[in-house]
Image 1: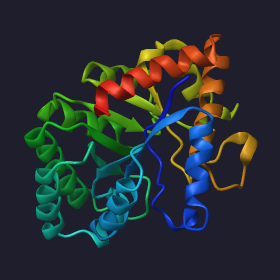
Image 2 (image 1 turned 135 degrees about the vertical axis):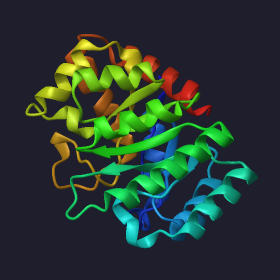
Image 3 (image 1 turned 90 degrees about the horizontal axis):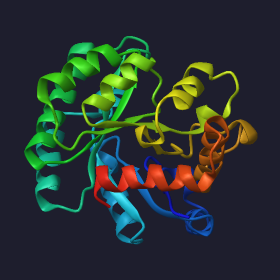
Image 4 (image 1 turned 90 degrees about the vertical axis):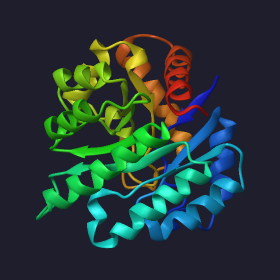
Length: 254
């Protein structure tokens, strides 16, 4: 059984003391590939050194909307140079976040639009961070129409918004949130849409699962995410793993 964690921050300091063990634990439950997204240009070298150490790890580079104070125009030029050198599977984590306090929407849109344009230039998918901004994001995606689409990380929108993303060539990232009974909207969307609409993720060390509350999340727990989806859809874990891995492989070209 093959599992793919399409969003895991293995480069974060929380994993510094036992990173090798955590990667091996994920491999032992069938996790064949892990996508490690960047959030600031300062952290890209650390991320790239990590993924170079393991063939199962894949780098995505991006400028995250929640770290605007860390970004500059020069970072966009640096991103373009990195993409030109190859070895990057996606642009991300990028997006729009209207949930944070005092969001600078104009600046968020500036960095988003520039990075979507780079995705178009380099024919790459994108990993999207979207909170309280799905309609605005869909407007941008309809405007630029990326051939490779991408993944809506930790999808939290409506069924209608989900279908709009799917029509634009995107897939919905599902992680630990789906394991909570109170996540009724997401669980209903998972029950309604076909398995091919989704990819698996953990967002480790964040987004802990319901059975591991207050613990540092780990990529091995993508298996528990798959099990929760299987329970919701009344199918086998193997079916979930096969469908979501197929979508991840096609989208990201691992």
